[in-house]
Amino acid sequence: MVKRLLRTVLIPAVSVALFLQAAEVKSDRPLMLGTTTSVENSGLLYPLLVAFRADTGIEVRTVVRGTGAILQLGRSGDFDAVLVHHPSAENTFLTSGNGLARHPVMTSRFLIVGPTADPAQVRSASDAATALARIATGSFDFISRGDESGTNAAERALWARAGIYPWSTRDGWYHENGSGMGATLNMASVLSAYSFTESGSWTNFANRGDLAILFSRGPYLANPYAIIPINPARHPHVSARSAARLVDWLTGPAGQAFIANFQVNGTPPFAPAGKTHRERN
Image 1: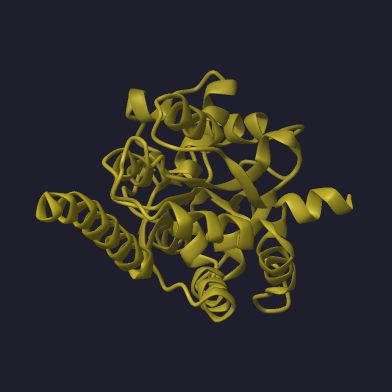
Image 2: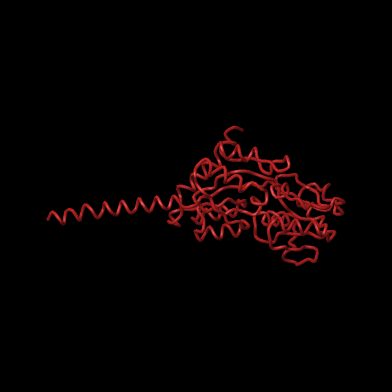
């Protein structure tokens, strides 16, 4: 009877100890973050994560792709959190149960860039959709990312507002690069073509050649970034505690101050938009 009682007491105790040990190991592993090429191209990503590790002791490993690819990998539970910039796709990701919540972190601006001479007269357009329509009307070369990224989605939304769908009609002046922002801007620079980018990548892009910012005005060019922790109920293996620490840090005073103070060639590629920034404004 005594032996049976001891077995009854000891087995749960051992189980609890093993569970706690496993949880501790899980929290000690590096946090997996999926994020976009525009954040990496801006130069912000790695200094930001170094500062986070210095404050929290949590190492972060990253996978960098376009937003569409990152969210698809997130649906498979490949990350603990994702930092992306495609609000409608993010909402779909949340309603499907793959993420816990969308937390605003920072913003940049989408830009239409092109040759300084601006043969399409983009500079004088009344809005961004009209600017793109002028490029189409003149059949001027345009280089698109064409990679299902957040930037590519925003570009296509503007073409749609103009009633033009060059990726479907396969117009000869419209070129889909199928790669990240840096490679797309390099091609535009070589060809003296128009392109659609965002201020984070543009600020850190050195090989501009004859390219210049031609249009950056209006509400349709706002580019918000948000972090979404992966739902542990859907993907039990994720490190929810570490993901929550990253969310709190990025949207809190330390992360928001880092984003506000980070500059490339004297220019901040992003503006803070987390809870600390919103509370102050």
